[in-house]
Image 1 (spheres, rainbow over the protein chains, first blue to last red):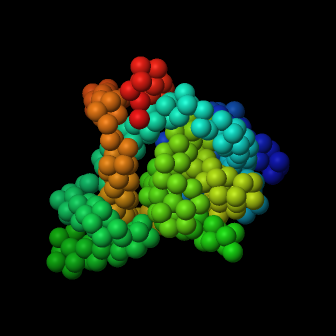
Image 2: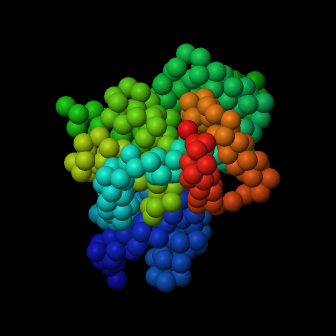
Image 3: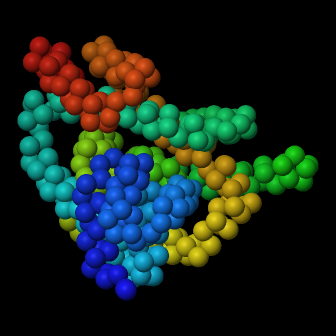
Length: 183
Length: 177
């Protein structure tokens, strides 16, 4: 039985609407919606999609959704999942942004936002912490981290050249290790 | 022309950010400095709201940045552009799956990418600390929250609500900003 594109769109719209916080919390939601309720994919497939999505560029939640959509109905399924996952957040943020821009400048709100800045910085540090445990696997990775951090802060190098050079450095380093028979 | 630049910049984020929603931040910061579509101060506001509203943080951030730029049309462009690379890449590698992630070059590239992505986000944190933590009271709120982060994990909502309340409270006693 062919799963309807509309059905794929609907399920991912729902997932986009109940997901708060992004990629890392999507697993339990997907387990319920696409495995337990609908049996669209197996648990092994979900684990694979999740693992690969983390090593792909882009947003993790979007990547997993596209994998599932593609598995169900090919390119159109992928597109239906993509449109689905962005629909609810888009409507939500577009409305909030409009409201916030109208009430900005109201003094109590300004102080709340001033305070929230510190909360945001702590959240960013939390995400660095989380990535750190996955990223810094050995001494060379630690060395790279500090070299990149220094070049970003000192020479104001933009993200694109940093990312591109990190790919080159990663491959060259592993090739050298391979040649020396160390890996 | 702004539509084209928006497309280009957000497509680049979708193509080059690794590690989920917060990995878009260094790119969004760079855009704020380069194009002035929104300010760096607005960026932290956007992140706060994106973390507690439904949807993947990265999608929310893109939509919000687009709304700030020129409203609905730029919001649509930013949102679609950030997700488009994912669509191409996932469709392209869907058939390979395991073969892709076990590939030597892919593994080595990711080995290099992860510390870079981590450093990019850390740099944003350091820049924001420098520009935001400018008063004793601000430092106090920030230091307390940081202590909570390192001793016990709390949900994002906790940090945002507590810091917002602290801001409001300090405003009432006349110590904010």
